[in-house]
Length: 200
Image 1 (cartoon, one colour):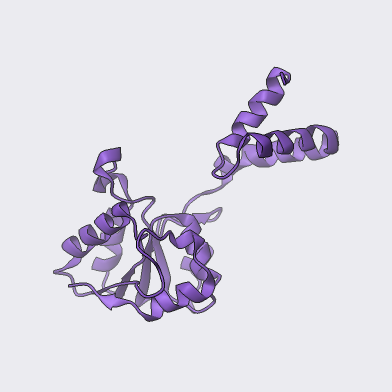
Image 2: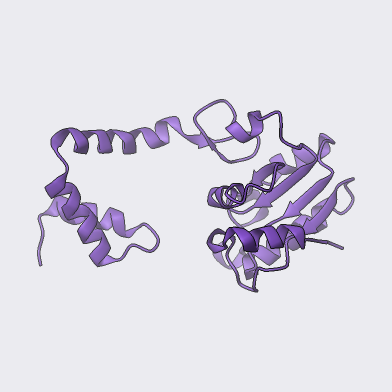
């Protein structure tokens, strides 16, 4: 069915969200059009407009914040000696939902993938070096995905930090080969952290 141009454009925006197909995008767009009053629609649009204006990566860890640094980096009760390195912001949320890790995080912003043109300089690695060189981190837990890109990234981190005074470990038990951390349940992630192994 042919919809008005603006409605089609809204559907196309929704389709860019992972897991949202044509029918779901159509349902979302029609719901906004037919069930949102003008005030709700304006507030929704304003919120979207403010996303890029007010939210940015934390300059320390790469997580999201609307402050100078994120809540996690400001939390003085956290253990500075342990650092989990993840690929994406959503991975931090997954680990936080386990309520068992009280260290700090570092978000790389992706994973190395030569075939896709993603090189070390495209990731948040220089700031990770700075944090390690500061000397407060005793253990770096590499929690990249068990995909080809994730494993490549883990090996690269092992290479560049092998001569630094920090113990490198890799999460393991419970996550299958090719597994994506953001889809793992809390028990599996707890097992993965508990079963981490040294990287040689």
